[in-house]
Length: 622
Image (cartoon, rainbow, N blue to C red):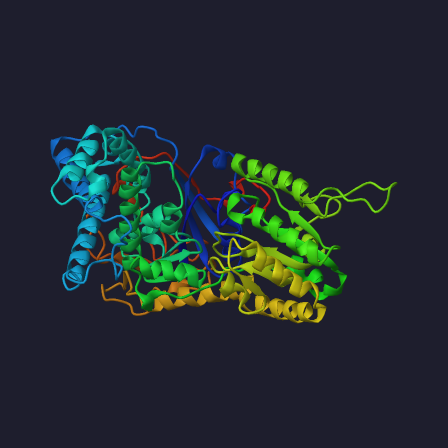
């Protein structure tokens, strides 16, 4: 089948989020054909290029979310009136949303309003959806929205909605700078509405849209479903709405309230229209249910990780230093290394010979400042100790990075210690913890995110920000090598069963087939007499090769209003030709280039994998 893979700031770019997961998925499903539609977040990301793409990626189309070039589209009076109406409706749904109340979720209203809440919630959801799709149809008819979304009309519509009766208090308190900031953020989030991806030769030609994340990345999938009835699959290993709540702490309450309302409404609409939703863990699943996702649509699929680099360490646990604790990850305040250092001070009182290796580096200036603070704290808590008067003192805490002669890789870092520690206060899916499990190491972790789900009883869990509890758990395992060995072996067996690339790829292969089996056919094939040909356009028809004889021509049924309603007679392919003629089943429509408006946002379309930049695949920093 043909899959449209939707990403934002990720695959196929080297520095993208979830890029490695998408690359493993595409390479593991070689029997399918993939079209990648990528939204980029920065010029730096585009400049670093793509990872090498496998042959099953037949097309890559990109669009920028950071470039604010003018599309040059000037609206007439009727188009301006349509824009003001739809944008005003969109703004009204945002200003009326109570901050902290997730659209479509239960338990967010008073008991007196409990009976009217479902109807009101559904009404507001339909109102938001109608405004969103109305803007998309306007962009399709007129050629784009960026100039209109940045216009004074948009700001005034937002201001009227915030000043209208019934608007929330934080919306009424929004000042002009706040309204300008919100309008700018909405323009960036709604930029996919102006793309020319939703034609029969674009997302309309795929069998399934797979959004690699929620939020803006899923917006093209919503429009492909709206215009072309393409089913949508949404995968979230980190819920975008939750990430929004944790970012921009310096913005005013009015800005945060309006943007939270938009992202909440978009998440609810995405979950409502998706055929299936695949959270990466129970933590993300609970967030999705809280945001209005139907429980019947949810299927947990754990992220797949390559266990091969950790096989040697997992098969020889006896090589570890029994007195060494290891922490591996990205240095940032959320990892709470300060609590880990204080806990290690307590550990040293019970086990004077213990050592702590902190392996990892910062990803930004904030992380660099935090690393310097932790080094200063370590020097204060643990003065350099020497064995004798003629020996050089050393600190029991070391700060290192992988890639050197002592620690060439993460597997060597995990293998160097008998116990792996995680001290985070905020965590999604703990990939570093799973790597330690692949290495057969016992773990002590804080109870945050999906930690308990990942270890499943194969390690010790303590409350976050509790150095004493962390120290007691570590001392208990350092003094009991047999228990460490049992926990490590159980952890490795669990990781190999649940968190490998193979199980992830197999799960998505089954999900693809399940969705397609329950999706009505969007194309009908006619024979030479004009009669429908049953079973003539199977999903396997998109598999590359000539093992399927294409002897009929497809006509779109039930598509958008501008599509032709006249049936298309069957045409016989030239036997000497190696390629299916344009316009046949699974191929592009020869008239599609004349049906849609030009793109409002600069796009890059590369159809040949050989023309792509050859950049090595690298693991993202943690």
